[in-house]
Image (tube, rainbow, N blue to C red; front, side):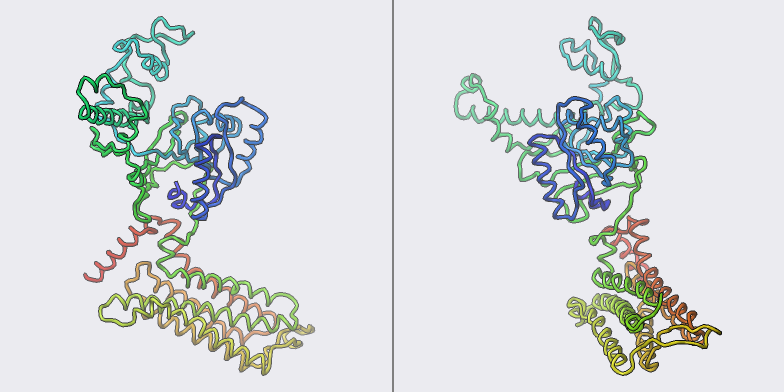
Length: 566
């Protein structure tokens, strides 16, 4: 379940459990795992197995589901506890919610269309099962006339054929012949959906039979066969034999009740489909093998999933995504954090200037952009180092492992801090008036103070951007899996183009227009860095999720190597 939540990025969920010991244990274990994985619980609701329908507490329960911001609901408990959810589904159709059911609830067998509508698009988790050989033919050819004393057959025919055997008192329900077969079931009901637990019951019966056999063999060795037959086995005496039971069933699956093998369990992920209304099918859309390596145990076929009405699947960025990890996660975070003040520093240019804003305008602009551009340079150097260490005989592996390329950011930023400190120490910016830009108006502006210091700060930033562009351009054809070098090249090309255009326009304008030109250049260059570097990553994560995995990562790497070799 945790793998399913993390796969879709669902970190805000509601939990519904039955009010019993099993529910409490499930809630305790689930919350412990959620805490480790960073998943939060919106609220928890306990469901009574036997309750009065339409009680006063139902109003509060329905309201919590309706107003909750959690769109993912986890259900766990016995079938009897489902009645509370059924009431909420009847009066408040819970559209737009994904229900994940962990118990063996045969929801598709319910005759309540409103309930099927609410659970449409939900997921059901169950242990992996296969078709029992011969079971389908047995069900298709069996009828109550063959087993007249078996009450289960009459009950089964009543459930699926909506008729009762002759002589029963079922009111207006029609009577069926005793030789009626289930081979001609109405609608889209498949024979194997009669009991989803058939496979497990089949294995349980065989496991008990094997345990009894082993016990009889042990008793036969200890005493005579007549003594073993007269000795009556008690149920608790089979437990040691059941723990050691291991056999291969007729379907070819290895069945073992050894607790040490539970970590090798396999589960099916099924999707509840109720379109058209009343269809009620459980479609297998994936599987999970516990004990598998990270990101390899869960397999989901998203194309087969039917989502609930009104539910929008939003793929959230995660620090564990392959795309995020493959593009130097730490430097990407640094770049994103530095771009935020790049956008915000434009607010210092708006409004009536004062002594503080005049100083902060250019100093903040120079420092935050230096951090952003130096981060791009560090990312480019990292790409080059990562490619160079793949060649044998190189002695620069320690540069990449130790994160030496990250030192570019503090070194470049320190140089800019020194230039800004010299600027503030010699001739800092101050408030000035401009009476020449607009006739008849006196405009309060921020004077740069020392123009030489201003152009030193701007020139250093430009040289750093040019260096980053040059290095990224030279590394653009390296076989990087996600084309990081190409994105860095485009981002620095946009950045340099904006500021090369800025210089002549800035010198040809005066007053408020000059400030507007600088604000536009800051926003355009910031948007260029953000879009060219992070937009392709968001495209892969949101629109091409098949490439955002270790398997897709390796496939693209192998394809790049084949292209280079050819």
